[in-house]
Amino acid sequence: MQPLDGGETLPPLGVIPVPEAPVPQDCGPLHPGDVLVLHTDGAEDARDPAGRFFDLRGVLAEAGAGTPVRLVAGVHAALLRHTSGRLADDAALLVLRNDRS
Image 1 (cartoon, rainbow, N blue to C red):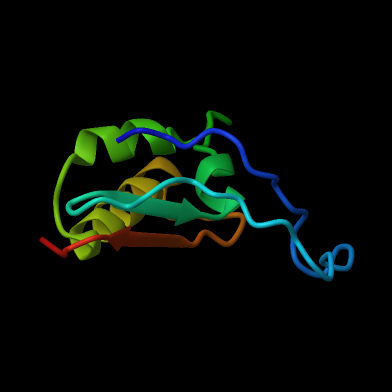
Image 2: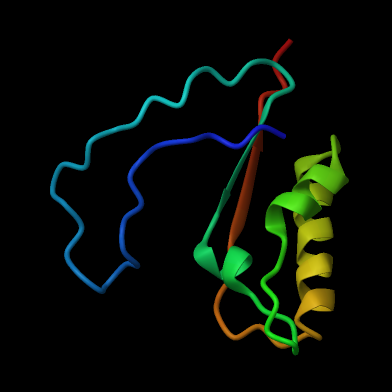
């Protein structure tokens, strides 16, 4: 998986008002078979009992190609293993795949 670079990160919802007209970022086309993974910071910032961060990029790279459902389930299972089942923050993951041919 190739991470996209760029785009503006906004603060958590409710901390400050969201800009009335955020500037859209063009991240390029989503070609047939391409996958786009969107996630909250809770997925990347999760720590194990020793304080080490969760390697979301590594888990996604290891997961390889699969259905979006399996990808989300695999990341969720890895996240729970990493944190010993104790998430300190919310974690959301959305996987979009272009299935058009």
